[in-house]
Length: 141
Image (tube, rainbow, N blue to C red):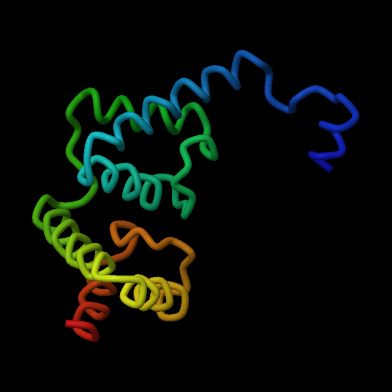
């Protein structure tokens, strides 16, 4: 239906001003995530816990949700994940990434594990839990 609307020149479902604001807020969230793994983890955790969503693309969320997240960040509100747990997840994710860098066979092993065991199309280790990463590393190390 959407593609048919586009092909027939129908107007967007979102007013242009709102679309512009959403794009600007999404760009700010993406810039924040690029600062490092902790910031990316903070966004993905927020999306999972506060927005109850598996979509980490800021453009797939509303302007109010993005404003709330950015307000939390700007006002120094605590991360949604305890610092120790975030640190452990970062360390485990780094180990999985190091394993993948060993070669194509190792990368294939991780992607196969993510698809079959974690039933996920996300291959970013930071988007999985510490237990999942521990179990994978126990199999390969």
